[in-house]
Length: 353
Image (cartoon, rainbow, N blue to C red; front, side, top):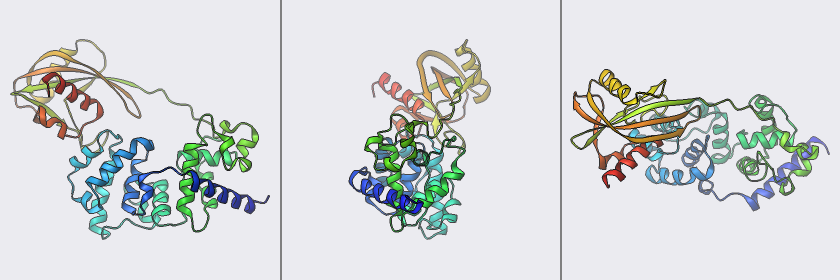
């Protein structure tokens, strides 16, 4: 079978399979570019099942791009809380303002314009253009890379084969159905062509897949060697004064930018924690405190490191300090990372709220 005949077979069989087996996802019930943009940003580095409730709540809170643009960043981060990779939320918020002010409130429908937006790369732009605007633009996320690598027996590290896979993805797009075809590729990778134990016998493309025909589909693509994740130890202070607790807001950019948290510091060695904590508070916050009992040790895994946080109750003695004093009942209103939210939840249990 020639290249054109094989391509047509792949297109036809995959679209037929998708029509019968596609996942029922909320962002597939609309062609609204804003809703699709939100979904694609949320789906970056996050699994579908995790995204669904966040997506529904986000669109209920900010139903239009104008609503998002007018919102306070803290409110946006609060709605995003728990989803992680908070730069995505900040980029959505900033982009909504730019589009509202300079593009008549409409998501761009040209690749160059989409790529100029913060947080929008070639894959996200391709998904928006093909799904929302029915344009014949390719996509290449993790699932699609795996499907194409197996389909065409591309054995290299997927991080290094993109230059070859992008034109392959583009060459397969059928005229008139780019959005459906791109989503079919994603679903095939998620449901059938999985990283481990792919269900090749149920795959509509098995007779055209060089990886399957080789007998070793899992050999494509070659897996990257995972780097060892560093482990960081830190101490945190839950400082109490007149029934309120001190929070600090992180800088607007960088890791967890804009989120609120209890004062905390990295430590090089795990000893004399109370003394170290009191010293940091005195030196960097201009406050004297009495470091009291331990609240507990909390853990969180981020993309590039693991955190162990040793948390202590502290009683304010004197000094103004830096931050904002918050009542226990208002702590849930402030957007926080997962580990600091766990601390507030434990405080609530201790106080009986």
